[in-house]
Length: 293
Image 1 (cartoon, rainbow, N blue to C red):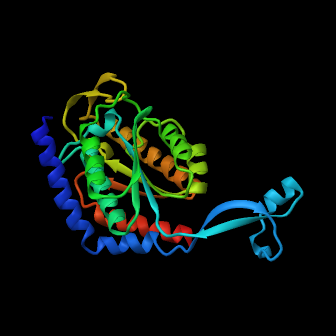
Image 2: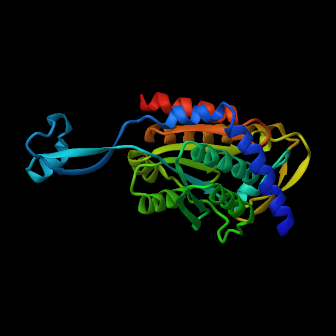
């Protein structure tokens, strides 16, 4: 992609996503993530006058001295976007690729955060950390996020969600609102790092998918290449048994992921490349609110 085409795509995304965030979607973001009052800051020894309801019994038992949790007022939030840029995200059969969809989602969430006075940071990952943009405010920072996502040439082809979550825990000590975007295809188990990250942060998962990923069409013999491994093989999509086996595998994968997210206390939502993504995002916010409540 040359510079002129890149700038055009960035401009199109900016115009579309800013229009969306200036609509009633901004209110959904604000109500979902603002007004939480106090956030955890540290644990210290008990002092005379401290509220006994703030005692941290685990630390107290471990140290044999009473300790209390200290909270501070939240004035702004930090939004962290964890965006999968592995080989499989280049896939798309209709309107756009999953990576294009990720760029729009990232811009929509970042502009919503900006309108609410929050900072946004991004971790781009494959089977390694491809790039990290620390949390900042400002329109140019958001456009830089989109530019990086559209132009980044990943060094890795596969996906390691756990590695991205572990990196998040190292660079983001304060609580953040985290959006984890991936197709979650052929991903090694990441239950433990997700559970650890969700304990400190508000983690929400966005599962990107294309219609062709969910159901194979009846279209004869196909040569299929795995975008992450390079493995090629022929698939007879005319075979009803093949199509049913693929559909059953997709259902099994979806159930496995749903269990992973539910066990960690994370809200999760599927977003397709051929549909509206504002409604699924609103549903995700509402789901997170119910989990928090």
